[in-house]
Amino acid sequence: MMAFGLTLKQEKIINEIFSKYSQIKKVVVYGSRAKGNFQEGSDIDLTIIEEEIPSSVLLELVNDFDDSLLPIKVDISIFSKLTNQDLIDHIKRVGQVFYQK
Image 1 (tube, one colour):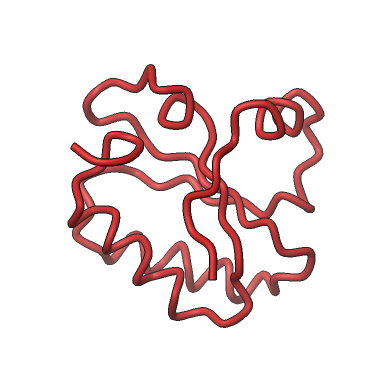
Image 2 (cartoon, rainbow, N blue to C red):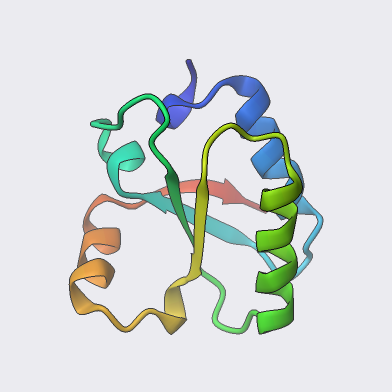
């Protein structure tokens, strides 16, 4: 196992998807995979740090993850669009950089 309980292949698939989008410069992982208390099959929670990501890009990204061969669910969000203060605080507290251009 590698970082955040992902295999190298899984990490590579996720990074390749993000690298297709020039607008995406930094992605943070949070939740159980960032804290290290994940179970096998836990989803991976990722948030994009950029201020302006068009919703069309987010939709394409979600479709890319759905079409990928990843055996885990990827929850993706845009940090600047989050409204749940507890979630925002959690990400600031435990979030770790997952992908960065």
